[in-house]
Length: 281
Length: 189
Image 1 (cartoon, rainbow over the protein chains, first blue to last red):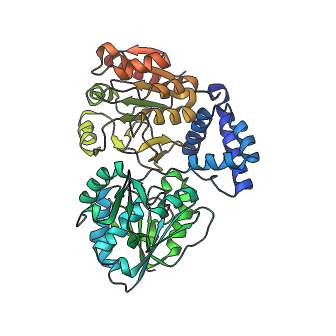
Image 2: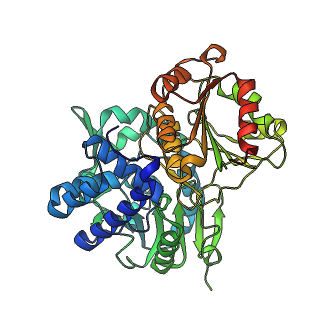
Image 3: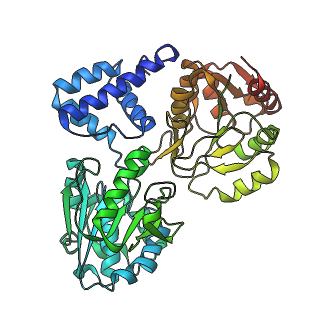
């Protein structure tokens, strides 16, 4: 451990983190000011330790003067851990509860917010294909990090992870074989163009950008866990405004609209899997 | 005055917790926050089980939940548990730390930042070295550190790693830890 923070300057750490987030917003427009402080502190101190930097002030000095260092830090601030069919039970519920509702539309739009490297978007596209709905939909997959969007667009993933994904696919109620949807090449697999053709990958920041589109289904899983409550409220409002009446919102399995300002604007379709429906009002 | 206890353990942890947690009487003045490595398994069965043994409520920590004294909280499986400066819980799916999610280091560090010297950190039996760095952070921020005596632990790797790196304030048996935690919890300093 190389950072210099301890009992005697714990308050200094809080001040410097606040200044750093303000500086990032003023200089680069990315707004982390209402992210969970515990999360930000952890990522920033991790950065200090890895890069042998002693204080947050030093990092602040560096990112203001060096754009490249800022983008490296940005990568560290956004968590891009994901997998195909993460939480298989959720996808089972999506298939049983949400698909019949989507089936009532001739054409529908899906917004996958905070899609990261895209594994869950392809999971969704495969599920839609198996239910015969892929041709009737447009999927928008968004993230604020262009580097992960590039990976998502390519749809190429490590072969070493496929065994785990295959297990998840089966647990999620997959109808055929996951291998039907990708081509193996060297140490990688590439998912079919038929899937990616239905997906528009786009740069969108949940914190600073506005309503996305009139969508029928929003998936935003394990993104809001990094937000402070005020920002969770703000983003849930954005989702509410983006959804058509009776549109559906899916959150991560530990996220909830309970105790937020949006609680009364949604009905619960599946409490355990965090699937909600926008009230008509 | 202390404000919270954090406990980390893995292999043999449930057995050790069965000795420690029932030692907190009704109206215990501090929250007790626990990371137990149990893989991806659901927490519900052993939380129900511990509730039969304990005098204060045992539950899984939830996102945004305000931390209350007299409650034992467990990190949910497959998520890191962190503490916000508003003394509420937050979760993270960032990659495993020390092959573990939840990681003891992640909880201990974030607890040290908010509770500083009002924190007690405890490392019990376990088969990897998760928690050693976190315990050192607690010490750096002025908290009190306790490690189970490896001689009495089912798995010695975790307490040994913590002893070596953090040089804790006390090295105790499970029974002694129960007494010590109660003494510290009710002390006025």
